[in-house]
Length: 377
Ligand SMILES: NC(=O)c1ccc[n+]([C@@H]2O[C@H](COP(=O)([O-])OP(=O)(O)OC[C@H]3O[C@@H](n4cnc5c(N)ncnc54)[C@H](OP(=O)(O)O)[C@@H]3O)[C@@H](O)[C@H]2O)c1
Image 1 (cartoon, rainbow, N blue to C red):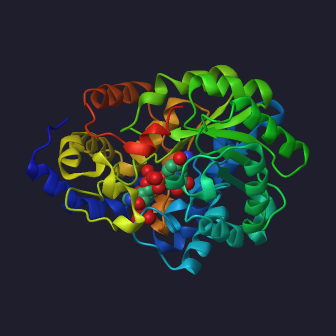
Image 2: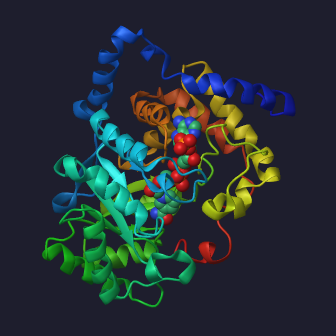
């Protein structure tokens, strides 16, 4: 593997645009063969590549890759035309994705409205995951997981989502003022009432996962997990394995960093992008962390995979119960991400790649201030 220097980074940036156009090389066919490509993708889900989150009565059968819908309205700078996003969500379902992720906090509210409108005609074929947990749905106002708030927010979410049940309801962040047993008990009541089908947590600690699970079986933990954020491997992923809880990896491309499309010159729109204020997305950290992207690019170049595809395939190869939910506003990226599930590592190449990746010490925190205080609780 090469060491990074400015020249090979520049070369990479030039090549990135070309690489972004390619899918797994064996899938590059002429236009008249596009029908067989599409059925190949659906087969990813239909024939055996599906994954299971949770166990027993509270398990969900999902596509290997879900779709994070947040960036269509919130925190990823450019907001695309609303109808385009609705079309993208519906096309994603046609492709075989069945897990769609949103939250009261995204916007707030408007992302759930978008997902609700997109999903209304195909509601029975897909799974909607949403989240509660902030005052007025706004992370900046603080946490609120009081039982009466959870119940009110769920009723509001159901209206925005144009449905009468939520497939997977997450507590977005643990509220230290409300015992986890009370939160789990409230969600249990909502499940009994038929408004919610399954319970999830996000960025919860090992202790809180155990507490919640004793009151109401937890189907999935959703936490940040990517090649830039590997801590869950040592903390929560083993507990998920032990308890039969699925693991949904959010920001699996590290908010776009692990694609090569973002570089030290990238400008964010601070009014709609949390990356503008996060240390990992600043110039020095991006340059310092670039060797990891070089490793992925080197690996992918020899196998017809993009950087994003290698990163997602690597996550999928860690455990059968891991399901990444990359966010995108673009059809080509969505197809590219979905196709990553087709790549099967040979065991020696996965080991070799991981050894190379382990050598890179990631620079820059993923969260600061209030956001940092609210994770791993
Ligand atoms: N539970 C939580 O607290 C929490 C926190 C954050 C996020 N989430 C969930 O996780 C989802 C994903 O997280 P995220 O958006 O933060 O990060 P991400 O999925 O790691 O990255 C998304 C970014 O990567 C870009 N991208 C995606 N695929 C690409 C590809 N193949 N090539 C190049 N660029 C690509 C997207 O831009 P384009 O639009 O240009 O493709 C977007 O800017 C969210 O939508 C949300 O549902 C949950």
